[in-house]
Image (cartoon, rainbow, N blue to C red; front, side, top):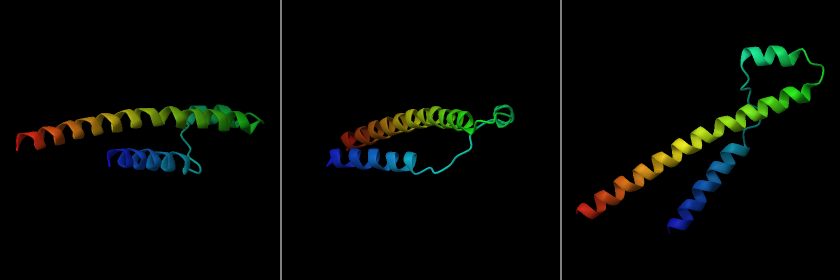
Length: 80
């Protein structure tokens, strides 16, 4: 039962991560410098890197929140 829940959570996270069609996460200074370049692939690469680096803190905080929730839930069940 729990393994199905874990699979659903991982699947939902993967859908959310890969369904982001276009996100613009560049700061104003990075955008200004990269728009002056004729090659647009460099700007897209930096933008993708920023987005991927932004995902990990959210995953860590979500994992920490889930661990706290699971600990709280297990303590609540054992007290009754």
